[in-house]
Length: 357
Image (cartoon, rainbow, N blue to C red; front, side):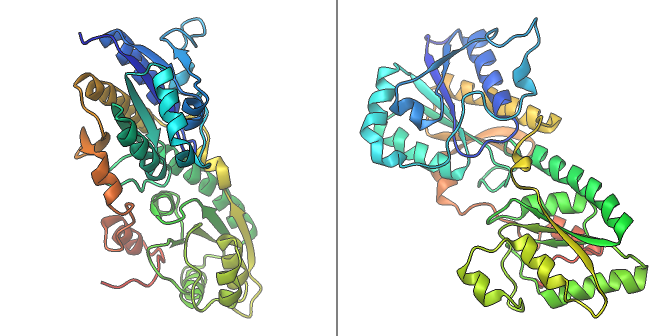
């Protein structure tokens, strides 16, 4: 048993499934194992700025013994993913002290964790980070909270869209999240039976995409297709709208739909669907619950062991601790154009761009 602590926890950045599961694990382990008091900081650093905290207990949200946090999406603490946090450093430092926190656990993506890292260094806080993002682009970890559920959500959408595409002989363009990393598009595209997957890391052309769709029709008799495109996929240079879209904010899904409508002399029925924030919501999957629970438990143990400035990570099937500075010093984890999933997609006849080894 360690000395009694007052442990704070906050969620920062965009929400995703599994955040409440982390909170549940932290509260359970810190309370049952160490006898600590745990408080939630509402709306991330805004809560520190406004000196607000919410007591968290094992039975605070029980409904006749049912624990809703295990399966509840979003975050009960609220979150922010914008603002001028670093302009209020002194006030945030004062808020941390006023709340009498002994340590803090922060759940966030690389952007949020970068800001929290600067704050903990200036304030000399005991701080442990937990990675979450549906983009799966945090460095030095193979898994993050939220990614698996987002993949399942996209795959469910692809399952539904495939049937309507087949019924109407349509090409369905499905735009998913992923501004710089194509992990979500790649994983869900393979699992969801996509015919084309377009991601930021691999260049592609409208001409080759058209040729692939024509081959599906002429060689295999397929009169419909599913195209999954990450929102950050680059506009191909052979796009008729390349110049204008480089200057304007163009939705890549609709742009691809417009371009593919000119593929041949035949009329092609094309629809674009942007899944948007639906990818962030929903009940966390079993895998996300396991990862979230393991991360929460590990973070509490690191606090108990006197560790600080570290991030819990999933490596080789185990939860380990890595220096947060090392995570932030590396570039975001992007899709390697030569990795096994890209090769798997190509081996299945999926067009995934023109990258060559």
